[in-house]
Image (cartoon, one colour):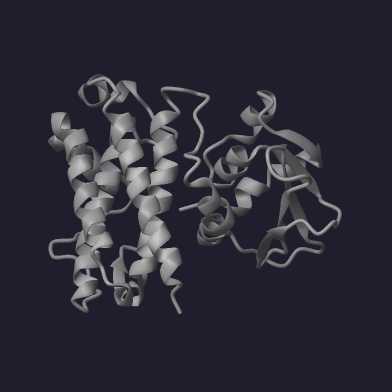
Amino acid sequence: MTDIQLVEDRIQLVRALSNELAGYLHTLPEAIWRNADDYPSPCEDWKVADVVTHLIMGANFLSQSVENALQGASTPPMGYTPFIGKAALDMLVQTREAFFEDLFYEFNASCLRLNSTLVSMESEAYENEAWHPLFITTIAKLVDIRASELAVHGWDIRYPMDRSSTLSEKAVPFLRDDFLWRFLYSGFQKSEDLPEPIRFRFQLTDGDDNESYDITVTGSKFRLASSDGSDATVTFVCDTDTYILFCMGRLSLNRSVRRGRIVLEGDSEVSKQFAEWFKGV
């Protein structure tokens, strides 16, 4: 059964992250959308303006999906056409170019529509089935997806402007304690079972004393849990932001080690396999 208070907290998180990012976007120069090619983002092939456009498009389709779900429908919104690969990128760029100088306004308007819909719902609707391009889920899960998108893409937008940027403090507990496992699961590359499990340990430098998490891969499965004292194959010593961003494919291992963001202990060759096991989506 859905935890009503948890969903309501996540809706407030979506609102807070939307407002936080909106405020930041309006500090950026017009060149972000006028000369979009000059501002690449950490997302492969996407410019910063493309990331903003993706968030607008996401808010719009989520609004339609939630509105439909409230009426008992979990079918794709009217007019939805799936795009993959280069066609998806082309559509994103075309949409961004169409928004042009209205890009930041469209972000505000799309967030207002979605957030207004979410806060006006009755709690009984949280478990309603809802459409997502990848699956049928619940409205509650769509809220979580939106929170994760705002949190991580908010960093994608800030990072090119400020290499010291961090994830929003508001989002870190949600990402660390809940969403990260789901993200890893979505991109886990299964294989034949290994002769011995590989244990990747993340020792956090900014958490409670000895706070660490193990991602143990057996080949066909993996497990994410607090460390239990077992020997690790590889240990990544880093802060919580780095732990989350690295696991979500936003940070390069070699660059992070070279810059001192990650201190690597154990088998350096095995450490490179982490990105092979977890590809993301």
